[in-house]
Image (cartoon, rainbow, N blue to C red; front, side, top):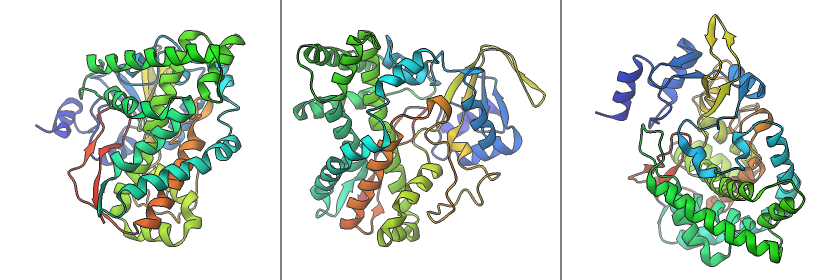
Length: 397
């Protein structure tokens, strides 16, 4: 029995289960928008919003739809314990944590700091496979590019990057349909936190020009605890890789079957910023996140009870026919409209400017050397219920 069959049996006619990602979830999202824009999954006891306007409204209303119990459908929050999960808290803690990173993640600061090194790394990665006629776009480009950037920014030395990427892979391991973290995933978290703890201790003795030193200084200023340094570092490490890796790998997968759009990106590079936004809308690297109601909420004749878990399906909002014409068509020339791929409101992704920059430069460098390619398979997606990205994406050119 396939996962799709399992979901259909659990949910009846609408194939959606927050812990069982489908190969193609978008037909199910369409049915949610059309037939049950507020959907109660009885088996998981999760309510779901799927239309753009509803998802945006709920995401902005943190006073009603709280992040106090984390924002993942499974136990991913355990990766960021004991504290410091910026995405899993509300003000005033959220305000304090975000203040620590505000200047470092300013879009201008991101561009000035990262555009040159991102291009150097992207070009070097492409150089390694451009003449071979084949590559795994996930393992050879989409994942190592953001990994190199976030590891370097946190201050982790080059010789440790391969080890850290192995831990990262372990952090993504899940058992489909289960909320609990596998023991191997929690073991990888423990190794990473011990590593960060030793690195932070070194920064307390001798600060450097890196993000970990920024956190250590915030600790001295009373803005962060040691526990929050550990949790924040793991969050930035994981999110800093998964989002960009998903953007790049998902995009390369879809562009292979949309050669007209690939040709436009290659021959008209001025379209690349808009193309990145369209690709983010079309198949987001983060499909859905969770909120918890702080009171009973009446919505269109239904009552979501206090303490209920509510899913915001960003990916469905990006395909809403009420906002976009022909949304299931990839079209980098369409009029740009605000999408919700990076969230909305106070929890809008702090790393969005870096992900956009890395994605754009990766496409520039790849298409300059490899104008056409074919996905040859077998492909393999990562197994987390929240993220949509490829672990393996073999290609020939």
